[in-house]
View 1 (cartoon, rainbow, N blue to C red):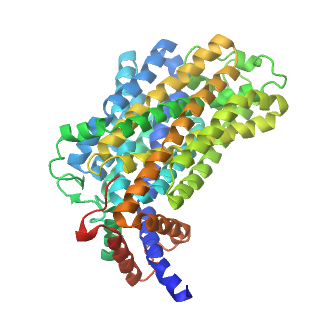
View 2 (cartoon, rainbow, N blue to C red):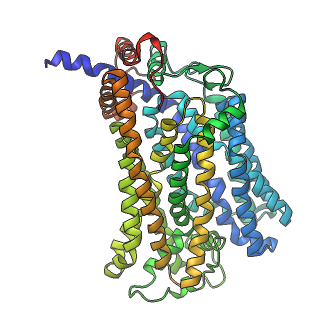
View 3 (cartoon, helix red, strand yellow):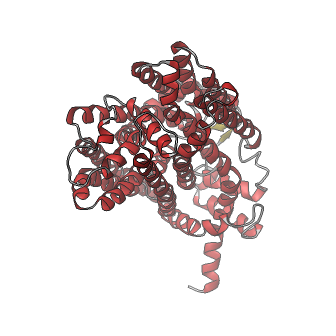
Length: 553
């Protein structure tokens, strides 16, 4: 093959990667900021809980019920929120949701009674319910499904960064205690909520409704994306749909009747049991891990932590954080507590890097199953062996914990990208909401399971080993999904005369050149417009004859 021929073959792939990079540069930063704020506003109660429950005389039962009411509103309103978004417009509805949840988060600074606390927790869950499915679906509208894993991984990295930054941010705001007669926890809710409202207003104004309204894209760019998407745009719902599939009932039936969506949702439950257990208990697990070196009982610090239920975890984490930041509580020793708090941010930083690398690799190869199976398997084995690793070396055990957390939480971008691949174009929005709603059941179970096991055994070893069991079952389920990819590739190969295989190769070529494109100027054109047109022509040639869209998965 001559050099000229090779260059002609790779030019369409480079042009397509450049178009994707334009979309990434112009919408991902704002979406990542929204995703990070979502987690900060969702978890700031953990950092405010100690002083808030003390000032308002809330019992652990009240605090626990309020924490659970968030998930009640979150799960119940997720699908209705997506249906509203299809009518209002996804970008506009996302901005409204973010602004409303910022307003609700700020109102926590005014809480005086148990009833107000319960009401606001439920309303916060309602307001945040459709945020992540809306972000996922918005990216689905802007990009072909083959290019979604990388932006999904960027969202996951932003959440991890939020987990790293939320603790010192909370500590900084809580030291405002007493300013103009307000408690530190009131400042925390008020200021973080105001920032979220401002970002929500910006999101609604700045995010284009579709590629057709995206001013950063030119005509050839839009044609490239449209050809790669191979879907029919329906302006009446601001999404993709076929005639006869536009009613709420039909969308629900199609999503609920897709067994693969349920399968991935169950896999998400198993993964989220471990993921949310780590999110809520990580500072305490780290303190237990480094608190003794002979495999004996937990240290005196951990013995004072109430672990009767999941609601004890946020308060304990808050005490660890604030003591580490120099804010003293009765009986707390800042020097003893600061190290676990500081170390707890390291696994999330590792997760941010891992999520980006994993997402880039998955998108370049077109593989999802093995990119889930191996991390899940690794996490399961580490959780099972962590107590034995610790007996050999505390440092090795901490490194292993970092790897296990990254392999558990960093894979979210892969599992999220399954839904666009297995749901029809018309029902993707509702299927995403269904998947997230069902998967979050694991978020409610994980912290509670850890608390029950620790209370029963007096040790974190058995609790962490149980997390390993959940991850190993999830790994087995991920292994099974190889059949979906093999079957889809075989079907496309037969229908397009091997075009699917060529498309996978072009995706790999595109993504290998993606990062240099991302570093380009904001409005730069990597290849010439002729290259973009060639990419559109190549993509169109891969579609079935007659201009019909390619077969859906």
